[in-house]
Amino acid sequence: MLKQLSVVAFAGLMSLAAAPARADDLSKIGVGPHGLDFLIGQTMTCRNNQPGPVSGPATSTSTVVAGSQPGRLTFKNSGPNSSEGYNVYVPSKKTWVGVFATPDGSYGSETMISFGPHNVWQGTFTDALGHTMKVRDTFTNTSFLQSTDVSEANDGSGWKVVGKTVCIGTKH
Image (cartoon, rainbow, N blue to C red; front, side, top):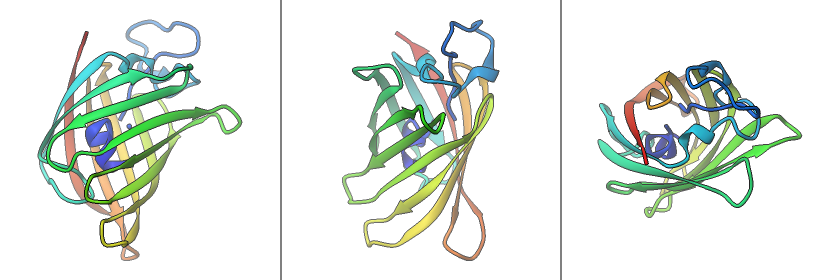
């Protein structure tokens, strides 16, 4: 999801709770099937200071579209080798799962393991050559329209920062 959240990626991600939350209640990001609704209709412009195969392109633009039911979001991205992906809320686990793939054959998935303005997604990434590694995205949301994603990868030798992506959104 590193690429997706750099796409989404940002997913940092921000949100409204199942019951309408105050517009400034960042603690509700990721909580419940409406926990990422604040992303719907946003166009996000992202800049990554460490572009690469795992962390994504130097610049990208993402739009977020609501799925057919609550708890489903699709991310449409632009940028060199940008990923396409979606996030789904899994009620039995009370968390979000995101999957993504890129034109070069890379793919991955992450699960949201902590919520609120400082949220973490963790999972696996497989590159175009078939090498798989653990990945983690830590998002810091300063508002519902701005987030910073620190992307990390672990190929078995320990966690290493592979990207830092700042996304600014506009609502349509």
